Image (cartoon, rainbow, N blue to C red; front, side):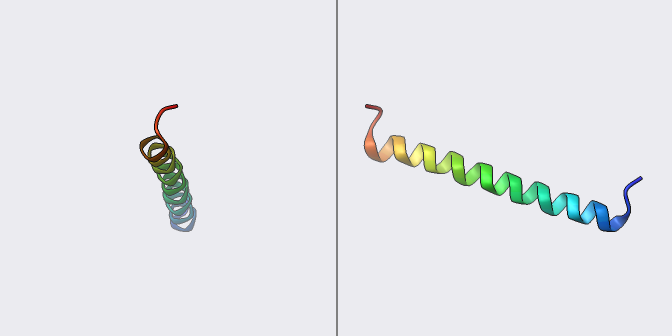
Length: 38
């Protein structure tokens, strides 16, 4: 079993990765909306 410290670190890493994925996805969508699909 992971220690509470490891668990906290894993949750923090997961949040960072999810945030990065969201920013990347939103940037991609914004590019399509602003510049068009061409």
